[in-house]
Length: 123
Image 1 (spheres, rainbow, N blue to C red):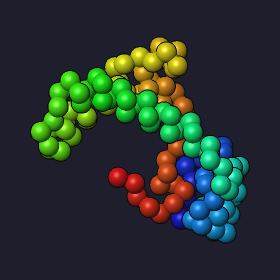
Image 2: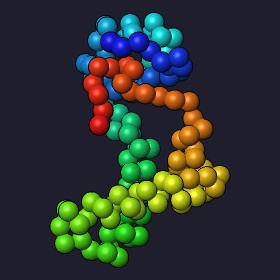
Image 3: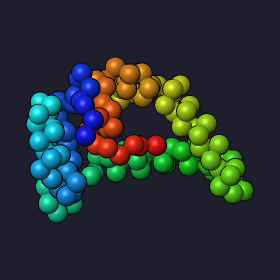
Image 4: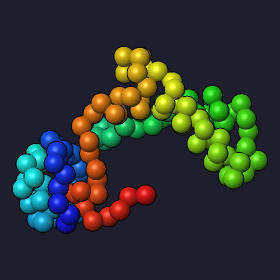
């Protein structure tokens, strides 16, 4: 495992997957001063928040981008969605974020780099 950043996450939340419950993983988290939080087994509402968020975001993307500019294929759709999500994250203020864009909000949160807690490089 790589060394932790100067400011590791305060709480690491995960599901009950074996990769997150292994002894080496737990020891690395605890050694870095992280608290471990896990979702319960078989709770139907565990992912409600993120699922609602994704559903709302995809609904916005469909109505504001996809339906207005129907793509002929995936090669045409990809740049459209890329442009829409760039707009959504960097130019569109959100009421829930007190008028800030998601990018502005994210820039003000503590750094979290997944590569620092596992050897998998995320694309």
